[in-house]
Length: 79
Image (cartoon, rainbow, N blue to C red; front, side, top):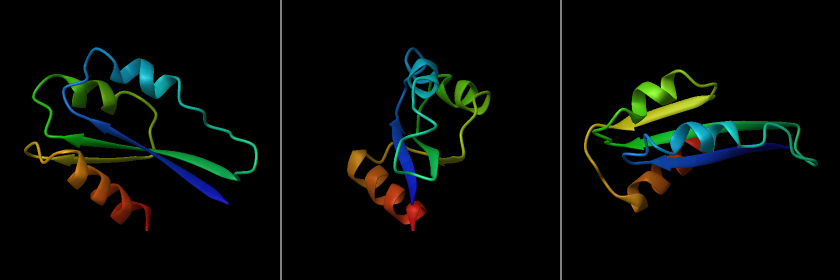
């Protein structure tokens, strides 16, 4: 069984690196753990930081669309 951890991001330059680095890459009961970051149109340096880190999937909205749309996109990508 696979697990996709989806993390919404909007102007999180102060927290995103630490958040990503602390996500588990192995969890009992799962064969694979992958990380998806969805950037909700950040205007700070979040994207630059994310691109330097080890993640599996990345999507960026050009403008802020809100958490509901980010969640919807997460489900779309997970399928």
